[in-house]
Image (cartoon, rainbow over all chains, first blue to last red; front, side):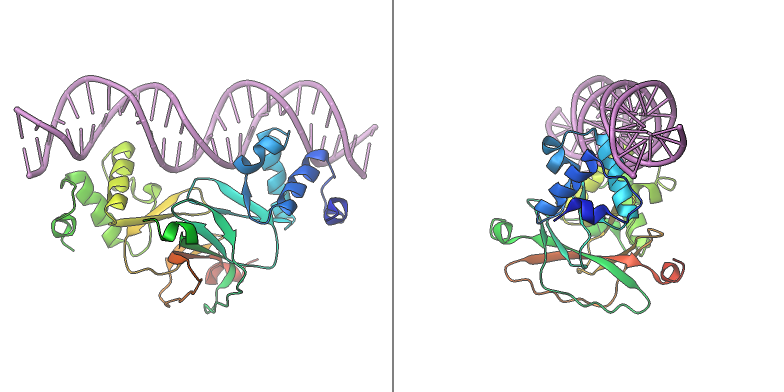
Length: 123
Length: 123
DNA sequence: CTCTATGCAAAAACTTTGCAGGGAT
DNA sequence: ATCCCTGCAAAGTTTTTGCATAGAG
């Protein structure tokens, strides 16, 4: 993915910090928290969070809260459910499309919580 | 609801603090955060959170994180989805039962995020 | 050149922990 | 009488803000 092209036409400047955040999010195939990537990026946390805010304003990035007190970020894709394991806290993107029909409500994200395959048999 | 009966057989003592937390959660028909009820209970926040941990260990109370950085608590009922509005942060219990069938996974909670009826038309 | 982005440090918001005294069984 | 529970204060976590400097367009 070409980050430069991805950011083009958005009203934000192209900086090294922004490129490295977006590259990490593109490379991961699951949502990441600041903790997940802080070892692999060099910017200050203030820069990270300020850029995430910009990305979200532009609709490039989406986020949600997990059980582990971290906020998780991913490149905005067509809406898909997320599964959070309440034992090991792993987060997975669910591929099966889900249709919901709540009258008058507009669904933007679906989060499923429970036990993943590895944890369901452990107790 | 009789709190004394509710707590009986659980390995925790019946105290004023615990009774008042559980009464508030029973009376509300939606999940509550510490912020929601701190004006109406007299205990210290440490006591509140420690008791919530006990309740969760006993399976009496369930919780999840919202967008507003608060954790929300409710009496454990038969699993039902929650709707969180990404505009006004209101949380509602969804009555329509939802069936999910993810092979090998055990679903415990479903959180839907989006725009509620009031916010969907505002932009 | 101008306006936005960055780093550092401090603050903010929510939750947890240590400790000494009080209370339920 | 014995543990468990409580309040207070302090510490811990994650995210945000203020301010002066650096950098993109």
